[in-house]
Picture 1 (cartoon, chains in turn yellow, purple):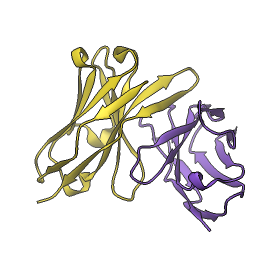
Picture 2 (cartoon, each protein chain N blue to C red):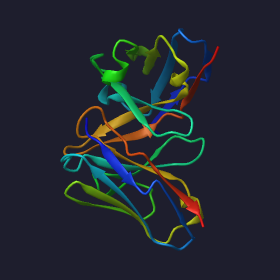
Picture 3 (cartoon, rainbow over the protein chains, first blue to last red):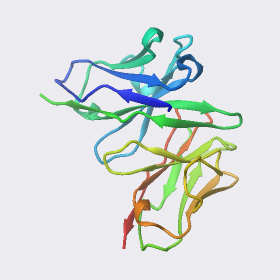
Picture 4 (cartoon, one colour):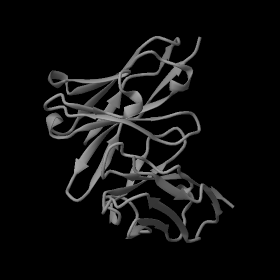
Length: 121
Length: 107
């Protein structure tokens, strides 16, 4: 079945970087974009950006520009999201999600299980 | 950025009730609109895509409708497993913004 499996929880100090992985299985890895979404404790969902696993092309939300980098390794069907210069308000669960496009519609399915990133001194 | 205004932020209901949740987009997004369900400690799960299409495996008591930029999620005959938080999302343009969520609680 189509599945996205993320790396485990991380604890980082302010100013550090974190790199979260998302391994895809059950479908053609290069055929679907992967998006990243985060959720702060008790809060809503915030879109961070996407990566095209085929070309490596990316599109980041403006508020993360300069701090986020999304990459992929096609040999192991894995995408990565690295966030640098971490602050306490970056504490959140980070999700990857595959986007399915069927014009005129696009939706996120499935989602990874989430990775909790805690930023604390 | 397209703003998604979701209401109510929370509601109390009983098993068997009919529940409606609304979401309004700040501009036209045609049918690039989705509903997700999230339970505590879990990832969001797709319920409705393209405004009114039911995702495979989702019970038929869930339905979606659209009128212009106003979108509605309806749950007919609420079941115990439906107590959760629901989010709307536009996928028309980036950033793919979400509504603030509606928490459906037991009355």
